[in-house]
Amino acid sequence: MSKDPNTVFIGRKPTMNYVLAVITIFGGGETKEVTLKARGMAISTAVDVAEITRRRFMQNLKVERVNLGTEDIPMQEGGTRAVSTIEILLVKSS
Amino acid sequence: MSKDPNTVFIGRKPTMNYVLAVITIFGGGETKEVTLKARGMAISTAVDVAEITRRRFMQNLKVERVNLGTEDIPMQEGGTRAVSTIEILLVKSS
Image (cartoon, rainbow over all chains, first blue to last red; front, side, top):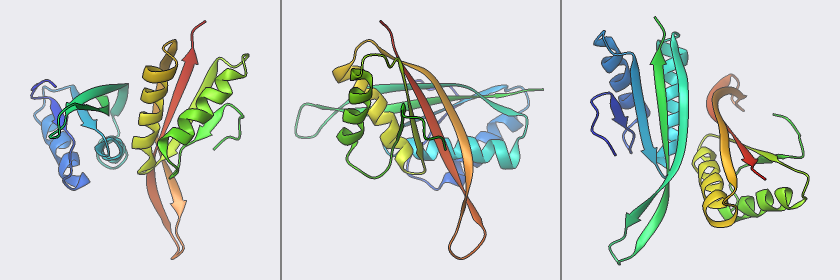
């Protein structure tokens, strides 16, 4: 996954931590786009982050695109395990 | 949420139950589109269903559109609680 500064990786922290991260990035002024990335169970959290940010904090935010995918994660026991992924592109309209 | 026969509501059952439901609907022959709907923690399962169906069983299946949203669910204690939702439109190419 990319290390773009405008990408927020959603994991196991409280949802509002990620909402704050998104708001902070947009608060920088020049940024028009933020991508949320998550896999597995964190996918639900990523959708929460998009919806809470959009509804409660930034009404001018739009979900521009949602991509679904699959990653093969190596396992300790050997072999790989397929895990679903999501990318949510958020765009701020002026 | 609609009761369209081509809609599969994703809940707490095993993921493969829903994968089978999707394959069965498409197996009817005339059906070109199936919509997956889920909310809350089941959103991750919905993405798993889309990805597993597409990768393992129907290579001619495409994720045509993904819509995110929020529903206000009434609570037993009174009031409502906002829950995130997802709709995934799967389309079979010929």
